[in-house]
Image 1 (cartoon, one colour):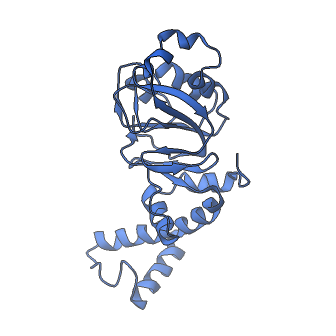
Image 2 (cartoon, rainbow, N blue to C red):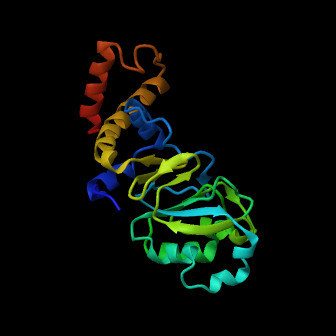
Amino acid sequence: MTDHPLSDDTRAKLKTISSASIATALYKRGLRNQFIQGVVPVAPKDENMVGPAFTLRYIPAREDRNPITVFRNPDHPQRVAMETCPEGHVLVMDARRDARAATAGSILVTRLAKRGAAGIVSDGGFRDAHGIGQLAMPAYHACPSAPTNLTLHEALDLNVPISCGGAPVFPGDILVGDRDGVIVIPAHLADEIAAECKGMEAFEAFVLEEVENGAAIIGLYPCTKDENQKKFEAWREKTGR
């Protein structure tokens, strides 16, 4: 999986940090392609999705390999994924950005939630999306899609490096999902990204408060004036941020 397990402290920090702040912190480190494109929440949740990636790779279905009877196979990778994704992990699916057929439905995703997964992400579609949206577990997809996955997808590999929405995802990478979407943090960077972004978000909360009170952006965001830095330090002391 990974030599950099996700600590409880880092998980707690990431639950309060936006994907936008993480994207900026990753950009500073030269990582520009970590946001999963074209994926949205099935239903918005109040708390971020956070967890290490457990991956499932789909390839284009070949008709002679994907009759409906393949679901009788106890080793079918899609079904196995639902039963083996570790507790606290996020199941991430590579559907080649093709949402013309589903990658899972509400029964399988409910099973995943009952097993304690932190979430599910697909750059394809989900069927029974309304039911998935009613689960407490966060779920992200491209759009609802009624056709069975066998129509266009063959589930092939578990826990291998994949692409999801154009972003590289390695097993054990840390997924963070909010109302904007999902971003992928390389596992070895998770602790420092979480620590840095807590400070970034405190500063942005201060800036937003200043802007709402009529302050101009130049010299404030980014902070290039000493007077604004002093204001921020006083704000942090006052608010405990």
